[in-house]
Amino acid sequence: MSLYQLGDEQLASLQKIRKRVIEAIGKNMDLYGITLSAGHLYGLLFFADKPMTLDEMGREMEMSKTSMSTGVRTLLDLKMVNKVWSKGSRKDLYEVEYDWHQTFTDFFAIKWRKAVETNLLVLRKAIDELDRLMKQDGEHDEFKAVLQQDRLKMKQAVAYYKWLDRLIDTMESEEIYKLIPKEEIQD
Image (tube, rainbow, N blue to C red; front, side, top):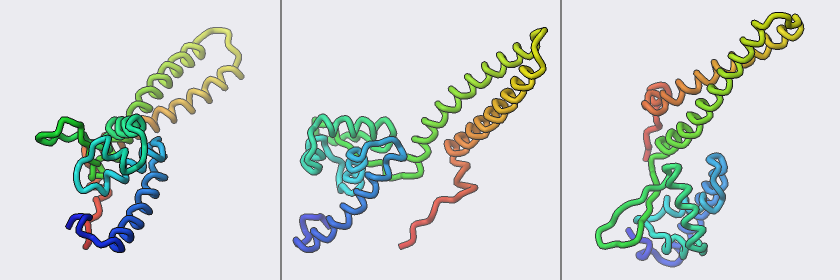
């Protein structure tokens, strides 16, 4: 059934419900580092019955094409929206990625992997420097004790980032769903 087949009262009721959901999605997108307006854009695409152009999104959301383009680019980079092709259309069309499990995995795997790699590199270099300082002759016992404490803290951080790396692997390989199965949709 198309929205055009609904009566005014039915359409108003449906739009009120959708607006509430879109508002909640928009507010919660800050978890992904996404602006409220880009979150609303995602919500609009979530309820769209067909892929939309930037012009169509701009009209619906009463936003400039530049703002729409920035929001869509952000959502594309995070793999929350896909660019699709349509025969006969010269404009880019966009649709939401409905697999929220995959969206979550893609987003956090990208962000976490970068943090893991960066932090492990820094921590390993710092531990090597601490080891060199501890081997130097003539150092004070108090200084070596502080170096040992810092080294232990850094080793604990390395262990955490190795664990996080394995968690990311589990998400990307979808092994996570064996541990925490996806919910079956009940109608």
